[in-house]
Image (cartoon, rainbow, N blue to C red; front, side):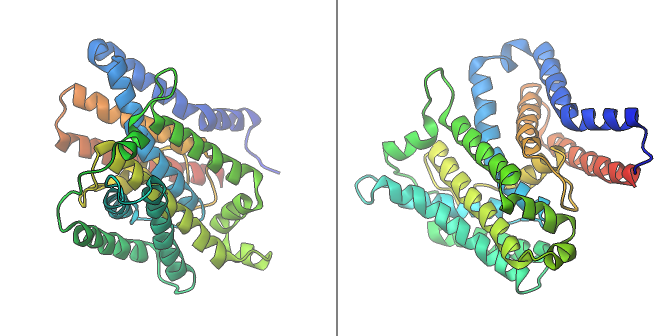
Length: 322
């Protein structure tokens, strides 16, 4: 039985559940006060939602990997490579639109499978495997595009990420909502989701209990790769091109969203809605700093400090629970 005071536990649980939401609302409130005309414009709000949605899709895949005890540094390069593939298949009259939609997702899943098999069956640390993949597929994107952005996509391809549903909600936000909802259902309501938490909490104990840890590890990297491929498709549609330099730094943004959202870097702990709020918070902060004319150099420092303090809070929280 825990010797933690009930009131203290209640406060910890409340902050864990609602603290990030409160921080998000406070940041939004400050930016509204500092720059009401620029920040609160409907067009700016839509821009924030679009930016958060692409990072959010990546973050949902990263969430599965980190909860399982891994890390995936390759997602930014997968975004670039699959974006080039999508744009190359989206020229008017060459292929059906469904080919340009499905191909990048399948390619992303295949890259994730290679990463997962290398980690699970090859025994190579996740950091090394995904770092190598990050370099390899950035080079592959440059080769596939001959070093230049791929233009000339069809109008139907552009509409994938460029349209709006009734009421003015961008399609990108709808995709993000759907991905987040499916991710939540998998984590909360399926055996697969429970096993993701189990292998992240203690892989040895999970194996002893009959869980195929290697297959699970391969599976989470396939999910991360597939969602990175989907993000590549969406980014190519949004920018109306497939750029081999796209997605640079996206892996850091995705990791930041997951960590800020309360998912533990050591695995086994995290809730599906944390990365959703984390992605929104990162987009809001970045947009607000742009509006306030803060140099991009300082923005990098601020982003790094946010990650540092998020991890520090996770470490201190674990120490306090022992």
